[in-house]
Amino acid sequence: MLTSLLAIAVLHWAVLVIPGFNFVLVGQLAASGSRVAAFSAVAGMTAATLGWATLAITGVGVVFTSHAVFREAVQVAGGLYLLYLAFRLWRSDRQGTVTEASVLSAPAAFRAGFMTSVLNPKIALFYGSIFATVLPQDPGLPLMALSVLLVFANSAVWHSSIALLFSRHAIQTAYLRNYQALNRVSGVVVGAYGARLISSAASEFRSRVA
Image (cartoon, rainbow, N blue to C red; front, side, top):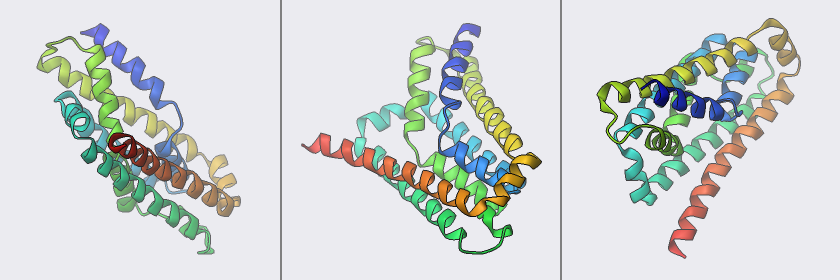
């Protein structure tokens, strides 16, 4: 059991530490001075992680593999949501006040963290591939539960660490001094992630019907 859990932890951390959209969202919210919003986004992300990991270990990855259209539709929805967030980040530059630069309230930040994670079916495929590769053929309920709790804890620790790091006074001061430019950069990065999700789904669809 310990060997399987250690392998899952190593594989998961290898992916977690690669900066992605979640890193950008949590870092931007924390640096803008909204630590509550940053941790709300973390709560949303980890809630979605718990859901996807639970579904993955019960075999939802097989459903996504067998029904590619469903997976692609969810992926496009996630991409469109990211583009919406990118628009809000870009548009916030015109508000003219530092207070509004944080863009999202705590409830909105939770929804953003949750929706962007829950609308990314590749997360389920990733967890499904880890569990299928590492776990024994008949892992048993205790090992399955511990595996899900492990990836949930990893996600919570990593994203909470980002929130704490970027909420440091020095980083907040630098952010607030340059918030217009940094909001634009965040908007571009978030939009790029959204466009990539949509482009990837479109490419998969074209390759299937060709």
